[in-house]
Amino acid sequence: MEILTYNTISFLFLYFFVSVLCQNGSDISPISSPSPFGVSTKQLIFKDRRLAVVYPIIQAFKATITEDPLNRTGNWVGGDICNYTGFYCDNPPDNLSAIALAGIDFNGFLLGAPTLEGFIDKLPDLAIFHANSNKFAGSIPDVSQLKYFYELDVSNNVHAGTFPMTVIGVKDLSFLDIRFNLFSGSVPPEIFNQALEVLFINNNDFTAKLPENFGSTPVRFLTLANNKLTGSIPRSIGNLNMTLIEVLLLNNKLTGCLPYEVGFLKELKLFDVEDNLLTGPLPCSLSCLDKIELLNLANNLFYWEVPEELCALVNLENLTLSGNYFTKVGPACRKLIKNGILDMTQNCVPDLPHQRSLLECTEFYLKYIRFCPYPETYKIIPCKDGYHHHWEGSKAKTMKAPVTYKTLSRHKF
Image (cartoon, rainbow, N blue to C red; front, side, top):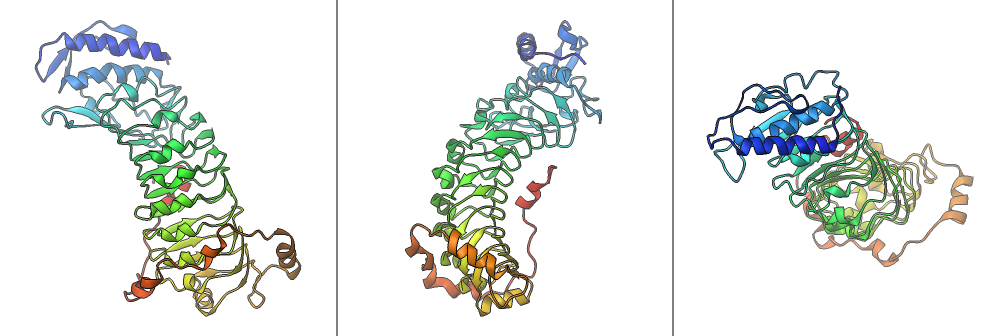
């Protein structure tokens, strides 16, 4: 298949744009032009001039596609762009009587192309681009000039390099999914200044520390799992108290203590930091997580007692503390163990089954225990005055399936 360069795509766009401008102003636009680089010369009729403008861009991108095992591009011919497989039209906000290309959904198409540059960044009315499970490579295009753009999903492709800075500053971007690619390096602080609701960057090769402004975005669903992130969880996480619902930080290299400010996250339902190097006692502020359903702190270096107030939270469906160095659990926690809600295996509680050996526990407490900064905060329960009010309601019978765990699969969820 003929591979066109980015300059070729730009030339095609300019060529057809000039051709369209030369037509009359009718809504139904017959376009006739020579056939540069294989674009059809037959008379084409478009429902709107905005569609005539994007036609050559689509055709030029089609010419760069190297793999299409499902023949998804087979009907990308003619002027009826709104019926091309994967393309969706709507009335643009600036002219509700017009018809424009508003969304693209290539999820699961298995298309291969060397770049998306010169394609989605040249579609002026595009608002949504979803392309999970393809073989798109190269850089992420700069979509900052697309005035309606707000959702980008290029997950499970072969994009590489550092974090795509081209998404920084996209004013209305609320959904960013770049998981299961080959990105590496640090996560830039600027992304946490964006007004995102969803940020999925798991299963890449990101390193370095989480930036101090980690809690500056009003994100609701956050997945940074399965990278190589280091350092501590920033205290600014407490700033997400009105928005954050689910966060996955599992399988990184995070260190330090769990910040007291985690307890401020009153909307939080899922918090998972399994398989890190976090340490310290658990802050009693965790007992303020009224809505928490699933809390996973397994396979870290936490120690001392498990706060009874935490085990008294009524919405808990799963509390996993296995693979740590806790030495004491009280009656409320023992009730959760009996009910199969709390997993305390491989700890240091003498009278519980399946614990670490005495030698292993002794060695940890003699050699590896690390004290936390701000120790005075670890016994504080900031919601104490109204602590019991949420016990009055009836406990939910079933837990809605978490959204973020589905991001740990490569495919669309």
